[in-house]
Length: 65
Image (cartoon, rainbow, N blue to C red):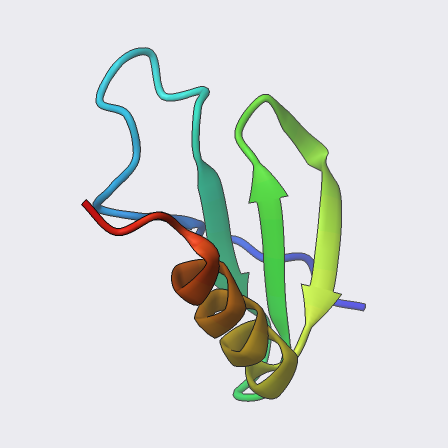
C-alpha cells in the first residue's frame, strides 16, 4: 500500500507545538488515512463514506453553545 506523503491538519487544530491534532492524507481518490500527530506511525485507513458518517455523528453529538 502506498504511504501518504501530504498530511493536512485541520484549521481547528491547536496552534501550539503541533502535536495535538488529527491529520488526513489521501493515497488515491478513494483511500484516506488518518493519524494523530503524537503517534504518526499509527494510521487508520478508510474511504470517504465512513469518514463522512463519523464526522456527522461527532458533530451531532457535541454540545451546542
